[in-house]
Amino acid sequence: MSHIIDKIEERRKKNRDYQDKNKPVYYSFEYFPPKTEAGLDNLLSRIDRMTSRLDPLFVDVTWGSSGSTAARTMAVASHAQRFAGTHVLLHLTCSGMSRSQLEQALNQAKAGGIRNILALRGDPPRSKRSWKIGDVSGSFCDRAIDLVRFIKNHYGDYFCIAVAGHPEGHPSSTSPEEEIEHLKGKIDAGAHFIMTQFFYDTNIFLKFVKACRQSKIKCPILPGIMPIQSYSSFIRMTNYCNISVPRKVMERLEPVKDDDEAIKEIGVEIAVEMCQTLLSASGNEECIDGIHFYTLNLERSVTQILLKMGAIDIVRQSEEKASLNDVFPTDRPLPWRPSTLQERSKEEIRPINWANRPASYVMRTETWDEFPNGRWGDATSPAFGELSEVSHFYNFSIPWENRIAMLGARPKTLEDIYEVFAKYVEGTVTYIPWCETPLQPESFLIQPQLVQLNRGGFLTINSQPSVNGIPSSNPTFGWGGRGGYVYQKAYVECFVNPENAQKLLQTVNDNPSMNLYGINSSGKEINAGITEGGTTALTWGVFPNREIVQPTVFDPQAFQVWAEEAFSLWTNMWLDLYEPGGDSYDLIETVRDTFFFGGNN
Figure (cartoon, rainbow, N blue to C red):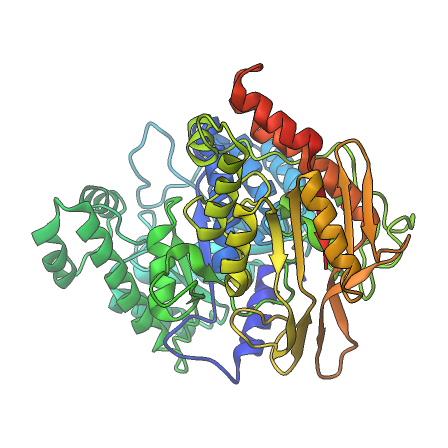
């Protein structure tokens, strides 16, 4: 199920008996491609973080005038589709685009697994400030309706097509009635749903939706909400797009127009109030149950809006300490975020090792012909392919100076290294090379123990506590839908020096219920309780009318591949910060070359 319209219907059906009118059934985020490589890298990291933490139904990526951002748009869209585990709606515009350029863009989208297109006329040529009444693009497709027809005629049902709606009218339309008539024409031509221009007057939007319904436009209509980030940009955008601003909104903004933080806070309040007004219309002919956010590539405001609406939760580390890093989706289909690629649609099992580096796992396995479902099975089976040995996914989007700030300018002792890992667990260091996001909420339960372990020289990079039959709706540990029960075996991965490796091995040998498999950078192994070819289920669940699901496993052969990557990260993400021959360089090199890396369950 790769079409957004199908996902909307699935989400509606799933929430039919549980819908809270104060929060959306689904929501989506828009991004635009930055102009610089550094900006692009940072945006990709932000999309990964926002999709994993905020769980949008889909994201959309804008397309520059005449295809001016085509390469960067495709880079953002394909990354989100491949690695972020979210459906992508790719903008495509008529203006300035020839038939061959349109075909090239659609074929690239198809090759990248993208199956959703937002068909737009696009911006006017640079010689014109805006469209005038009766204007057309003058390109191969004059208007968006022509692009919809072109896609349907040449690609059939491969793509789900969205189109734009303009609650305050499009500049080229002669009247609101003509605007609605043209919009209905786009739906009749094959479009599946509507996303609107942003607005700030909810009455105008609801009148627009009512007019659509009266004209027999029955498809979903997603209101476009743009959180206010600064007074100057708000005035500029509303003037440029001819957006009406209610007097009450201006009265709230004017007194604090020079205070950007206050403007952001009020902007969040306004957006929440708008969303709740629109959603409260659900059940009548307006029927609004989803929200589309114009993020402007920013994270904070959208996160706060969703929190205030109750669409997402904060899983607290403690009653005193909570931050936006603690936001976590509470309605997960699996413990890890599934891919949206068609070829991975039946994937149900992954080794636990890449839990904090999922993009690397997806890259390593993207050439597989089949993906494990039901049971992991034999990792050497040709049906599943091999974990690639060359597809290490290094996150270079974090600038050198930021890595120095997090990992240390001049570590001199092992204790300095241990402290970095401990601070990551505590939340004061937001990133280490093996963990691309803050500590997962499920590990808050064992956070004090993890901090103690790290300061004692057991450098943990992956962990989960034991869970015994918790309801699958639990906000921290739940997954798989309502009505089931989930289980976890305690697990931890850590780097340890040879002395601690022997202590760990002895502890496991003294506890028959525990297993340990470890290896160092030279290939020397330590093993207790792990048999050749043996695979251990680490997470499983029981649900009504389904077989037992085992989505997370430990496999020693997969761990060997992960260990090789884990050791390489010492070199490529930490060692390279320092001058060869210096004390810090030698320290990191010693850790890499002498420590063992083990998985203990």
